Image (cartoon, rainbow, N blue to C red; front, side):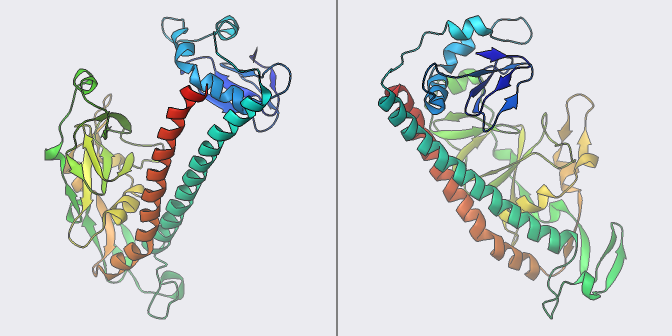
Length: 334
């Protein structure tokens, strides 16, 4: 194990040795290591994938070795002193690594496809609803083809468009939220996702929502470095605590459209609180947006992106299944 301003070779296993201890990766090329990470490789014939999964299987024990009162860390002695069960049969190592890495490779492919699909939806949204280059009657980009623009409180907008409040097009389902303490969640069987302000926090044995929703951080982690809200695109059966707004589209406005729209809204002006940041319902609903009076264009855009978001949900569900298979196989193979 090498640490601190050393060189990691291609295929070395990289692990964080300072909080958060145990983040693992494999070096794709030779790199210089900074503080807080170390590089590992097996003695003799290199099998980085096998070592990666061996460490992944033993990561809880590694974390238990943390020391330090403020920021936990582990050292070289902690790592080299870790007791692990290991097969010395190179063919077995290769087979185990192949099975697990194949699952991870498919998960990564799904993630990349989903990222591409969302980026495409975002690009079309920006072209139509931010740059105002939606197709005109002749199929040409509206603004650059001389489309008429009119003054509004938010600047120049296409003729036939209006300034609205976000509350005109969204429904909030916050009244249905029920927070559960960690102690309460520990008593429950792990079946349905339990979401917080910014992420999946746990699983519980019941649900209070079923369908496609957007979760928007209400307090705590509510905004990113660009001023956009922290969002989670969620579906099927799930539970939400009281730190995230639960949002869908109103009337003919699809929730997929709302998700892409919210990704492009700056919510800095809606935030209250100096220490504990918060976006309350009133401020959220009063955010100003620009949309066409006629919802036909919004419906056309939604038709363009709905298939992409359906594929995103399918890919994500498949990845969740593969993660469960991988995590079930890991202790058995190791």
